[in-house]
Image (cartoon, rainbow, N blue to C red):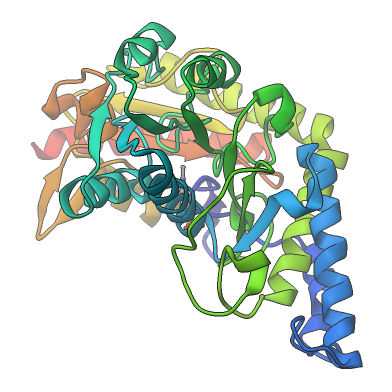
Amino acid sequence: MSMRRIYLDHAATTPTDPRVVDAMLPYFGDIYGNSHSAHSFGQRAEVAVEDARETMARVLHCKPSEIIFTSGGSESDNLALRGAGWTRKRMDGRDHLITSPVEHSAIIRTVEQMAEMMGFSETILPVAADGMIDPEEFAGAITSHTALASLMYANNEVGTINPIPPLAALAHEHGVLFHTDAVQAGGQVSLDVDALGVDMLSLSAHKFYGPKGVGALFVREGIDLVPSQSGGSHEEGRRAGTLNTPGIVGMAKALELAYDEHEARLEHYRMMRDMLIDGVLERVPGAQLTGHRTQRLPSHASFVFEGVESNMLLVHLDLKGIAASSGSACKTGNPEPSGVLLAMGYAPLLALGSLRMTVGMQTTEDDIEYTINALVESVEKVRALV
Ligand SMILES: Cc1ncc(COP(=O)(O)O)c(C=O)c1O
């Protein structure tokens, strides 16, 4: 009998929805033209790309021209920071960047590089014990030199959702551009850019049942971006490179499905997530929930376990067929605690025992029960090893 396999790592990536695959297939076949070519082959691809842009604009409540297609969340983040940062520095001399310590490395490393090599200064805001950004701390960090703030919509490790509208409003009061990394939020919470009040927002298709290697950056009309990837005049000169027609078609289909089926999906995620959280907290001794109790992504359950090294725990769970993840990186056998948890004030030893389990459309009650039982056993075994 084959081993039971349970995928609880939807924050890492989701399976591509078969309806999305169907929508993409013609663009690997007959409709192979380059959307930039003027002939009829190119025109057919261009129609598909522009239809996809309109579909995405409907979900984001923006103009199609405000969407730039990219190769994923990392590129969207890079383009937002470098593109808008460079423009502001050149146009009005503003060279200060604000971000938080719990951002994805696509933001953290980019801000670091801009500060170390490109003459920007940076402020990394503190976060609360639940990972949330405090608007007052943000207000206190803004100066007359601040060009751009980038604060994430929802955290990838602990699922905490930030209060984006007041944060964006604060930025605007001081003439600061506001970007949010919505890569984890996409498909789960509202992406209405007007209600959010953001200037730029990053998305990645593979987090909402779309294909990998394709993403988007919303950029509000009137904001100039220096292309961080230079070359041809694609995407109105804002991002060079032949467009990934099948990927873009798939991303738009996936986003449309996510919001057409929003209520049913969220109800399912919340039910599975809460069953998992309640079961783990009740049955695993020394388990603590990480992240905000209620302001968290519907799919997201994350914990720390006292006296457990989570990379060992992941191996034990994998042997039982369960795919989960931890925030700690394991380099040359020396585990390093998650920077996100350290920034939230967790002691390094406790932070080494982090576990993230993220549910999806296919997760069943049976899967959750099996996982809780497996976790009770595995935590006990890993603790006995120390
Ligand atoms: C919050 C966040 N931002 C950015 C990214 C990078 O996205 P991509 O994998 O599409 O480059 C991820 C991926 O995990 C993420 O969770």
